[in-house]
Image (tube, rainbow, N blue to C red; front, side, top):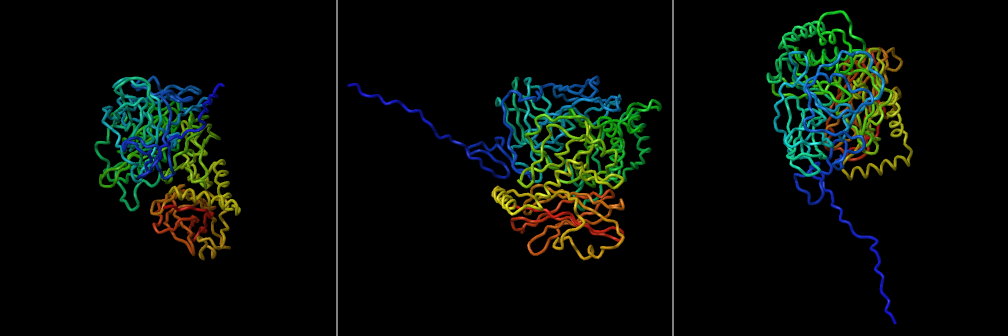
Length: 626
């Protein structure tokens, strides 16, 4: 009799060890990770941001960066042609073309490499001086070290991951994009693993070099001060800087011929450039003038070179107005940079502290011509949420020409889920040459007093307000569940959006005061107010609020706006702002550290005066977290 042999059974399940992610000081790493290793995720004011993944090979239509991909060839003056997708290149000399008329049809491409996304403001080529022939150049091409700090995200700074594929040549720098000036490289991960060197030039262009050649995947983590992107130019109570407060090392004189031409342009604008002139007033005049460009052919008549024709005729797209702005600003004593990528050109301007105690560079979008455009690798990213509004003038020509839609752009998550908000992520860019940034488009008012919120913006905001204000009991329970989960993670949301029904707040609204009720029946101009706030809020932290007041009289300036948090048994005024002549306002507020966790309402209240009614914004659910 034969003995039976037992058949070995396959193992259906086996344990898999998953490293636990631990978060400390806003940085999340697996158990056992080295303290200087790049974090798997970081905490930002918009929530948790995860590190990108990927191997050495490009994914989809991902571009390939390369060592030595820098050119000073002025023959490459035209914007990438519709449908073309050239490899990323850093230009060390730039002279715009004279094609200031309507752009040819076809789709322009933009590659988004940052998380959160900064579309369309990626910094690829930045130039900060002017050559003898009128071309823009670097003030100094000498590279200085910018090695990773291996530190947590700085307090009051915003983190960004970048993921790029690079073909390195051993020891030769490869140009890398950055999300903003004033950045710090915190850490990086290279596949294959290599010890890379990072460096920058005088205009804060970033480079990386490798001791070995070949194709690498590079993921790098940076942080940038939020004031680079938006918000108030100076801290509250700061003295106004003068032109004399600019550090001498940032000033690079123009060639003599351009000095004469730029001086005539400044006289034409009416700018006073004495050393004792108000720095921000001069800057505001220049921004207002160069945002007033329109697309159209340059006049045939008239003396002068391309710069003078562009500046005096106020014709052209983003590359033309940015080029002319930089030359004019430098002559006025304002350090300025020209910034471009494959889709858009804009400028950076130095904002000094009074009495020459330092300062920072600020991004300014000057607008341009509308283009058909598509963002590659953008739909899987959250848009960056700017902390504040655009404090500069926005003439009607600046806020015109908005494209109907942009394919592939980062999509804003519904703020009720605690996800990232996006400053204008629904409307996207404004031109190639780009018109206004979303922040400007949402907060600017044209000369006729009409609000320039786009149709898609209105629909999106209205839907969110409706969901928030008119939620059923079951909806509110669901929202409460989300809040509970969010609170355990330490993050909460402030929901604030525009409202189209602002004339009849209920009697229990904390903004419904006696002076507003007494105005009923008087022949005063009606007002409306819309607000947008940051999507996350913590006790004891700052909350940035911006908005626009509209008046039927067309004058919405110099009105006081109170930002109110409704609390149990009453309300608390978080702070006040005063509207600019176009009705815009922005303010950074401190959330009290003694607030209880839970749901609140955020309200903006406008105090009326002798000619204009007061009003209040809609009421919005809010969540405050520790």
